[in-house]
Image 1 (cartoon, rainbow, N blue to C red):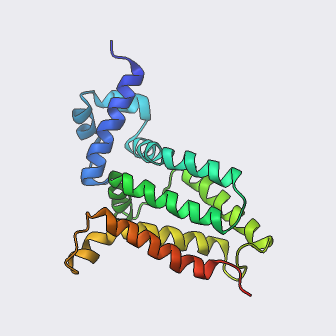
Image 2: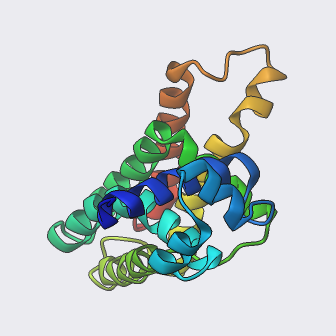
Length: 199
């Protein structure tokens, strides 16, 4: 008899492959079961529904980033260096996980606004730490913390979602990691000229 944990992992692995290829809406539980080599009833037994399985796929993919970022948010001072570290961490994470970027693209196309619980916790703590830095005078106070967070996430995600279109029209190779580094250093310079306190 198959080990339940091994079965669950096989289902998650298969679900990742088909979800990332086709998106959530175009995938059936039958396809996932066939890809995993299990019955549909086993998927329902372990996950309950296709929606719950999709949520588990997202949680599993975000876990490594969540764990690293939570350590930084809990242990580092609430200042511009914490923000810089967070931007670099998110950038490196997406750089090393192109499948996650593909998943985020499907989420955007399908208007999927359900985010993994751990990502919501990160967002709440990140906003709280930004507000703490502002209250201490280490970050400018005239920009809402949620907008600072949205700006850094948008700058990072935009690069990985659109870099091929941006650089192909410029005759550059979008897979050249030197371009990743140049973009990261560029947004850090631009971002931190505006986020540190004035005067």
